[in-house]
Length: 520
Image (cartoon, rainbow, N blue to C red):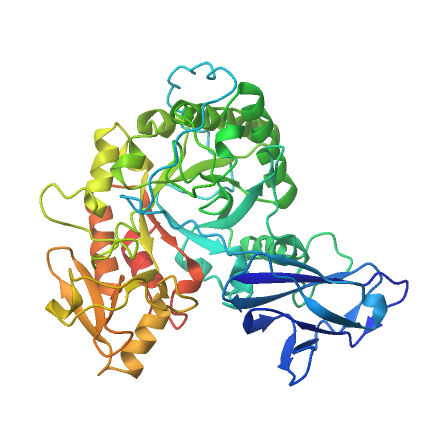
């Protein structure tokens, strides 16, 4: 679990060389925005500043983050010692990292029983007319073909991946993940420190906008072909979508807040990642049978308000969604109706299998046995059959792998039983970043072996001596190339991937392959 601690100077003079000491019930494995040391006596942990954040002006805040294992949302800092005292008492806020990775179909847990709405079902909205082709605006990028990359807000912490590292020449759309939804049903910042407060070289403490959002503005200024969308929701932050989509008034309010958000922070549009209409996301999410129609109504209202804003601002604002790939979840949306008001649909064609199942399989197979609904081709065919135009469809590609442990050495681990999710790059959820998989293959070639399924057109890695038999399903340059060939052969709009920090940074990774083939 990632934990954020906010230190604020509540005094009237600048604080220099602050320090923070405390006990914590979970083990701390890494820390950022400070230097961590351990002590033999209580308080066990001590944090001192980095060279660039050793001073705090009056009223200034600093967010320190660390990874705690095991996760304990109720944990608090104990035996706290802050020096100097004017630095104030830190606020500890456990923040498990959200992820837009879809819960695969079939979901490992039963879909929560829909909660009956205490208010009447919202009046159905007529099927919207197709969005007319917008009048070109001078100076705006050509997005007839897209390469969409998600930037994970929390990547600036443990992953140490920053906006200035985005290889902008290789893509033309950056989706920033994620904005949150307030209790009032409006778009708000999730991690304000990462988004608008964190200082980078050249920033000053009193400038109105810092953090990732300011870095995105700078990146766009240097790369005029690039557009940025704010992605709202994701796996962790989708709990309030059903409520805000319920009535015309709540939809209007949400859309107005989205328009205000992108105008304030300089985004070019909105990406909605509701996981999922009708249920199948977190058990705590609210869901209703009428989510299916209300999702269409919500996107229609967003499109209306974005177009009004675009007319007033003499420019184009974009609207997209991250859409499910499993047939049970596709059944809970209206693909043709929503496509009519969207610029494109990013289909999350990954996480089709994973450690919620006890049998190993490919999580993003391009092909499968006849009738297999859990492949990339099957998911895209479902959207085509539902009436979505090809030029509104974008195929999702994973820059990570999923894994199982306790896999017997039979058939090199493929289609075998397991004992659960393996320990991956960052935690025990089984996820491995692509760069990490490649480094392991290179550094330990006798332990990690790569194999290829010619039917699925997908690779896998099996390490029989590790974690009781480690199986990793992932994408490599060859399989990504085959998926790009498929995208081109089907005349789809392009490719989307989750997420930027997962790739190699030396030019030998996955994104250069996509760029060389999709060619936006």
